[in-house]
Length: 144
Image (cartoon, rainbow, N blue to C red; front, side):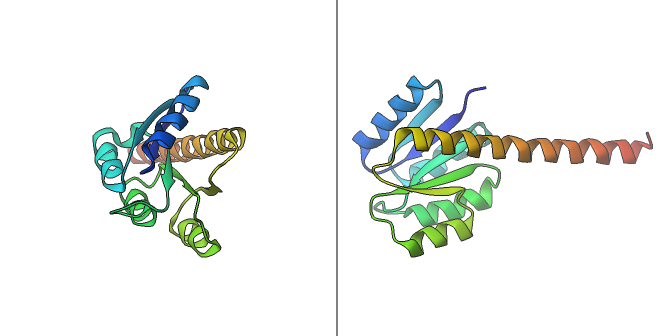
């Protein structure tokens, strides 16, 4: 099963290079270059996205602001925060808001891949639990 990844980073060359590296590892990766563009793309594709890799510091909407919107509108999508200018406080804030994990740039590609796989698995497990709860509700309602 392929992982659908949205990379959000104002450093276009970095975002595109990361997308290419993920594609080589048989993931579906696309890049956008602002928080606003990320929200627009998510509105178009919604739950087709499994994991968002989100830069913390961007002009306009910051990564933390984008994270707040993503977790509010698409609570099952996992978000990995990524930054070259992180502080412990920013990492803690992102995790409190709902980020799956936090990595510093430059990050080791294999470490990122491992985190993407774990985040994807967590999303799938949550979706399975929701489906199971819906099935149980239908069975109870019908008295089976």
